[in-house]
Length: 303
Length: 186
Image 1 (cartoon, chains in turn blue, cyan):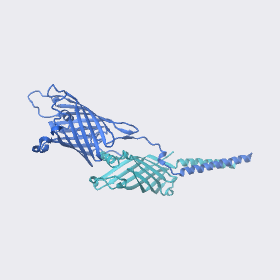
Image 2: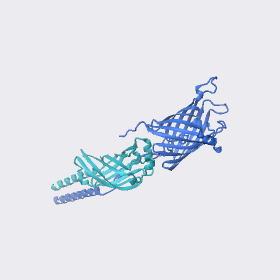
Image 3: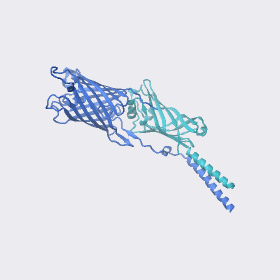
Image 4: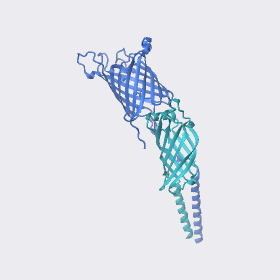
């Protein structure tokens, strides 16, 4: 009886030692170590649907990053159909100097001054949705944009009672866009422009329009942009046309150069949406550019 | 009775060994990887503090997975260019390293101290895999395992193109610093 017990003990000990060897063996085997960890789901936010926060005239779905100040110099020369006498428009220029700033990655504000009708403008742009893949899938990005513009030309009739509020213009816009793939980005911008004072009762103070814009990326540093703004009928004088613009983005380090042709003279919403006079068919087109230079004002913190 | 003792002893050894099996592997999801490009006209730094790594001390096997979009730059535009134009992060979201400590016997894992090591293996960046060897240090302090390494890689080795306009601003060789505080993998 005692003997039998001893044998049992032997067996068990043996068994344990064998297990011990086995455990040592598995440890030494080479395997895919990272697969031991569960993959942590990450959200991959889509970036750079457009190269800057403007397509051409329209605001793009992109925002200025947090703590970054973007200084923009925008230029539109005269109409090409001015011919050789006007050196195809180069004798005249309309300019807007602007600053864009990212308070957060989702809130952008800006200010600008246009020579066209001596207009000051200020805006805020708030990102509502961010396109993403991975743990959270969102096919589109969306922002809401609001701006106010003050036209400061001298009153044409200083003798009558002129109200400051007559100088004001408001724009509200929803920007919905998607980077379809690496090369193609599209966006649509339903817009309402409100003019406090209009020339006649025949035109409306509120103007509804829809902007369409797209980008085709040719190389990592070159892209083609196009935009078209459709103003819904019977709101503005028939002398005004829909804005059509075509251009390229060129990127060189800290600068983005946007070179384009557009039939709009103004570079702010109330102007290029409701007061575009150029006609592409007879050369009523401006050559123009936007130059963007960014400065990091608030440096991000790293741990 | 004697056999009983042996049995208990064997069970104890097994338990200890089972415990040490647990302590054979270390990992973290918060490894720090920095790189510095020191070019004549511009110094660029980027920081990543969410690299994943696993170390098996029984055989010195070491792996890293690094999310490229998790590199943070001081300038947002640089970060965008890094992901869009150079690393093509949507196409190649992660960089990987799979290799071994070449001299695992040089490290006394149970004893506090600083041990120089050499690591070699295969590094994949931008979809291109290269053999790399780098010096490093393992520090054991109060049972905690940490590791660091500094080495340089040539940008051209990984098919990352630098256009001529920024050639003075981006270094051909980028210095990489790795700092890991391991946790036990249970």
